[in-house]
Length: 272
Image (cartoon, rainbow, N blue to C red; front, side):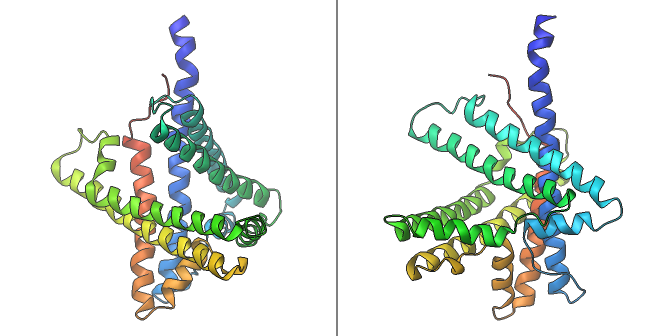
């Protein structure tokens, strides 16, 4: 009986984590689908995570669907904070381990903001405006001593995250986190292809967002800061923009698929 009681919270955190991966995947897939429609001239738009949430709530039974997404995102946030604080993966307290755990916490805070936006939309608010809030915190950082350096460092870090996504995609390192033994060779290749495509697309977006922040730092202008929606707009404005946007948009849909793969096959460690 004692063993069952002690395992019960971990089981629920694991279930919330898997549900959270699905919710995260839904948000990215909606962003990608809207951008793909815009790229291929069939409606749609380039938008960010809040725009995706608004699109969900506009569907039939939208508030119910968005509530499910919000619950999943909250579960994802709980999972990230468990990883950061409880350290079930035994990352440790050396510099590398602490950096990874801080990364989990930052990721949790980011998705807590997205979950809050979902709740605000359900309650009839506009969600707060991700673009404005991003520019607001960029302006606050710029107003601090060495503010331009701080914003530039955040931009460089974001680009670093983008390159890490490329590394994970091309090295196949993410494969270690997945239990794919029940799949045959063709199914594993499909899963790996979808995952790699999604990671590369997300890496491209991260690099563009990081570049926006570096521009904001060098020009001391918070309005230069941009997020996911602005990154997709920047891609669309390049030569062969619709084609490039279409590829990245489909990649974001693939990243949504990768999140669903994570939900199904990821080795989630909760108990220490």
